[in-house]
Length: 361
Image (cartoon, rainbow, N blue to C red; front, side, top):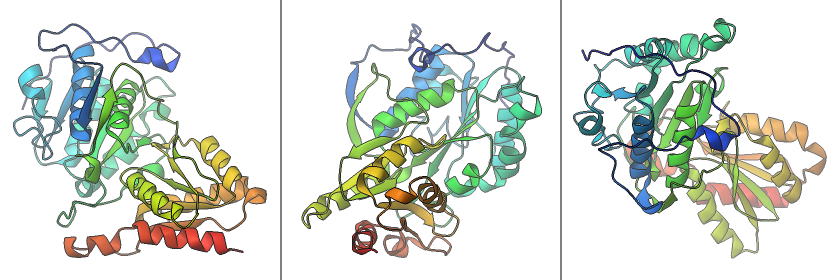
């Protein structure tokens, strides 16, 4: 087992406003000057965010199954162990509950843990540690103890993986008060939301959409993106608001392109952060269009779409021209890879909902 040497916790709270939380990069012999804006994949963006955090603060630790020697299943943590050493990036036993238990203990001793669950379906053994302890320490101690733990979880489907490797776990974490829940959809958001998450004094569940790992875009590491709790309107429209997150943002944008051929104008809202939720942006969009469709990968019953539909119906009732509809996965266990495409909500399922919304009442 890697020996960890105690270090004192950082003194004082993070400064405001939110831009100042992102402290300048400390000089490091291992750091190479890089252009401020570089085209990179989501994998590379997450790796760079982890490097930044580890260089800026030696209390930041990265650990999990195969994250050091192998660099992670998706090579997200590749090179971190070589750069920062075995005390800062290390492998753990195949024991997810222990990984989160270790994280809680390290946080209590002043560290900033960034553990990785190797796959979404493997996070369930850690559920008790997360729900019973990680999420509750701040309230349990009357606000005296923070839990700056960011749990990275490669999540969702779309890659043809085997059983237990393509789960939609967000509703479990969202129902657990005390956790922030983040789902990036672009490399730029993956970089900046992870930076914000690691700087947060609260525990964060950081769900990485595996189907977007190899998406590429220009990432500007010098211009901070909006913080946790801010949604983004990815496409403006006038007829129907489509609300989604993670890997399905691309699906919604593709559907909006096809909808334009039928003279339907879709507005696409990327939530980015599920808790805290930027409901103001959602409500403003729905009030402009009068119709809403919520899209997520998980099963329909008690999925996050149900909560959003209820909130929209309660707060935007008099602006709605039709009921809030949902394009989701089915109420079955996740299927084998050969049936995955038929199970996941896609462009056709979304456009069916759009058509129904436009035809109602």
